[in-house]
Amino acid sequence: MNRCKDIRKKISAFQDGEVNQAQKESIEIHLQNCRECKKEFEAMMLTYQSIDKLPQIEHGPMFTQQVMAGINKTSWLDRFLNNILRPLPVPAAMTAMVMIGLLSGALLGNLVIQDQLNPLELSFPWNSPDQEIIVSSLSLDSFNAVPPGSIADGFLRVTLGSDMTIQNHGVSL
Amino acid sequence: MEKHPNKIQTDEDLMQRVAKGDKNAFTTLVQLHQKSILNFIWRFMGDKTQAEDLSQEVFLKVWQSATKYEKRAKFSTWMYRIAINLCLNKKRALKIKNIFLAPLPLKKQTQINTDCTTPENQLLKAEQTSQIFDILNTLPSAQRLAVTLKFYQGLTYAEISKILDRSILAVDALLVRAKKNIQKKIEK
Image (cartoon, rainbow over all chains, first blue to last red; front, side):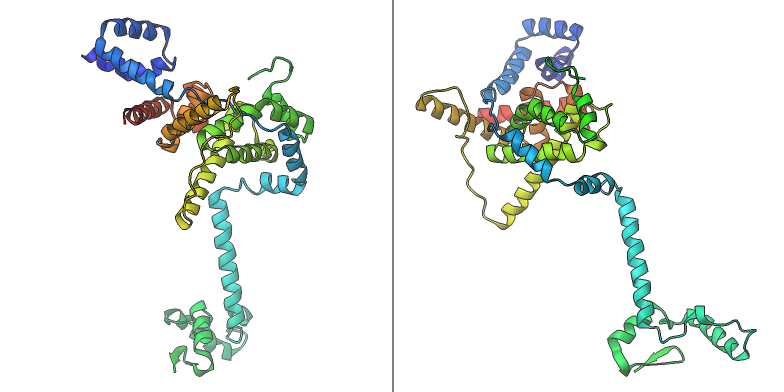
């Protein structure tokens, strides 16, 4: 019975001519002696016979000309884009999208809150005693839920409009 | 590397010329492979009009992607992969279209070029073709691809495994399952 099991595992490959010579001979001998396996093989042969009568179809006589007309329409730019840009791997494309998103978000945030203090424009505390207060105030803002200059701050300013005032870096309506 | 009887150059050599923009080499490739690619797509998709359109798209894609082709790979394997991707994309698009629109009635395969001269023979042949597609339509895409590549295109398991990017054992298993499914369909 184990022999039959082994043979049936290979019977499809045998039908497709995908077994080596030794296996082929061994299967052929087994099929001559085992009625059950022979029945299984004949049933498998019927599958290909049932789909055997599909005719060949052909293109119209102008096919090659149509294809050539198609490639003549394809400009060198299409070929360039196809070959240079398409192979960009998905992670690289996603990283590029995230970078563009972050940069445009930061730019938008700066545009919205440009009347706020810009840390880059600050002079250092040792230049002016007044600036020391501002810098220490800004450092405390990192604990604020909506620190001035953040995107959240910009969003609140846009959505709540001029009714909102920011006092001591807290929100009050 | 397949050499053509009246050609000194192999498909792979021709592709190298195509990559440099040689249209004569491309014309030769189209003429050599148009029939096999058309029949392959027709047997997989089951529609002659779609097969004609898709086979044209395959060759356009070959032209556009020629510089990406590596000579190490067999050209026919590469071309079949392009054809399969296009066919699967088309099937997906049709499936989505059918979700939103009422599916069109299946066309009977009557527009086939056969050597049958009498109308009775043509009708018989068309009916036979339709029955075969009824059987093939019951198979999932992967099994249908494996059957088409093995039985109709006459490729080896090793070639099919490269085209489908699966192991030889997996191809064997696909074909076994496909044959079982065909058996079930015949018994009904």
